[in-house]
Image 1 (cartoon, rainbow, N blue to C red):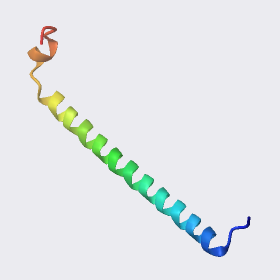
Image 2 (cartoon, helix red, strand yellow):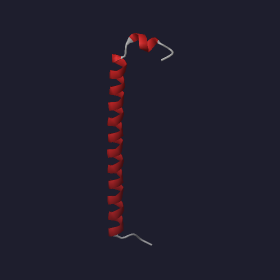
Image 3 (cartoon, helix red, strand yellow):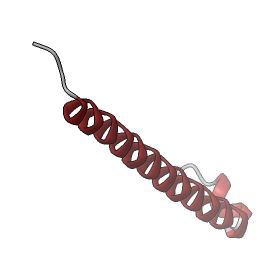
Length: 57
């Protein structure tokens, strides 16, 4: 059973759309992880030294 032009074009378009969605989601997750890491760095910088060394905290 041979594929026609219409099926081939639909397959190509669907693959491109899926690739675009994967790229956008990866970019969004990467940006969110960078934001969380920056927030963590700011929190670590503002933490008092005596609290950071206290093992019971």
